[in-house]
Length: 619
Image (tube, rainbow, N blue to C red; front, side):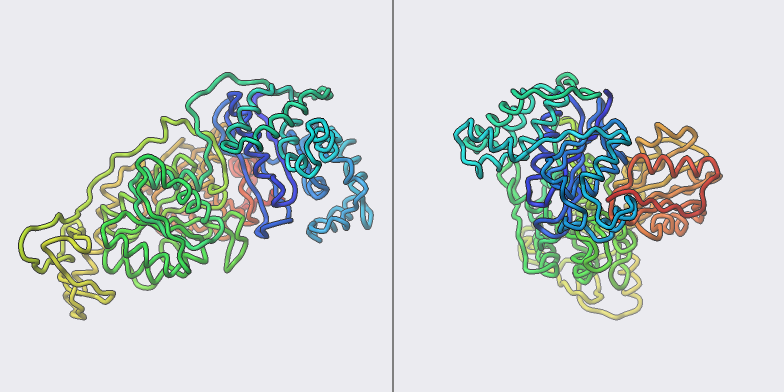
């Protein structure tokens, strides 16, 4: 087979993410390219969580509507996901749950239970009845008593039942791979990586996997064999890729206040400050106001500094960012978008902060907004964001989203390269008695030399008020105009200097031209394989907006984005005066799948679609 999607579902805190990571690493050891998608509830424990692992013979960055193999570690997974198993697909489940009814699943949303009741014409259908109906429709049920298997293997190994049941995630993965005909050795290698440094835990899990593989299993209609050996590949999540990119870019100081989904990046940095070349301090602050101002202080002292947050935290940071804009301080804010407004949906994806990133705060100051489209972009863009903050002495907002943050993917090691980026205007120390320095003197490119605080031989004033070139407060109209024009000139300089390939990429031209930014990239690039005559223009630099108007003329324009209103469409129309004819949007918190993107764009190409198309897949 050319590709397969494996899904595992169960209660949050029940080892679901470990199972998916283990499965992904095992098949990757067998030469397959993998990508993983994590969906989880914002409650920490107990609520439903599931992960998809899509594997293929070539790199993948999109996910499908339906899965080939579902592992249900609880009854709720059957209720929620049986409808997403394709005809001919397999579901591995514990038969103990079949006598439960939908209203006896304590964490199942009432709306889902009512939908199932209406669909099956009963007030409270059982999981046995639901599974039977899907089996008649072509799904292959495979009962597998996970806990009983754990107890039996534990008895064979002389391990107490409670300890043996802690390996349920390994049992689920081993059973899946064994059923698929995949060899044991890659799984043992993946376990060694998963439990590195935990000798007893590793030994138990490897013995459990070996015991599962000794059992006889039925033959499936599809098999999974190794895909050759692919050395030199690294498995990362988006948050990890961004963190490593910051280290590669010379990050010295990062602040954060815990907030989903941004926290993962800073926690990863905290755990990897020992890496060769890493010379970084990570500080968890008391709130986001402190986070932005502490990072700002580090930047003023000469350190490449950043903070990472999500929407509510970014809201609190806007006054500090305005201060950075006024004093022309280099600062990176990594903004992980999630469902809003307010607390919204902390662990679901969205691209609703585009306009906020560009306009957030009062008054006007230059800022750059850069959006990463995939994990490799996240790694490279993190380096560019730090370099641009110092080149243009201003705020750079690096946009990601929850989907990218928690997506896992294999990347070639050689692609994770350290970029050579320069252009800083730091003022070196001067000998002799300290003298006043015109820190904010007008320059043709808008960028004055920057002496970090404490630079020998110079001093200047710094204030959040408008100021003259030395930093003294002023409200003089002539000086105000000069300073505003000096600061805003940086946007024109950046637009001229930043390479076009860092601003946008036209992957393919077409009469129907799709525009997107951020995490829609992987889905839309793969969708092109199914859409002759459709082009794709991917935008990376959202502000200052790139000069793309000539590319849009005479085209039927489509935007695809994860928000309600079509913010990219509004921005394109504002900046290019070109009408966007169709807005494809999704705002239920789940990422756009390959299948629904292809279906929507085919309808547009064939003249069967209106101006607004709402995508609704996902559970």
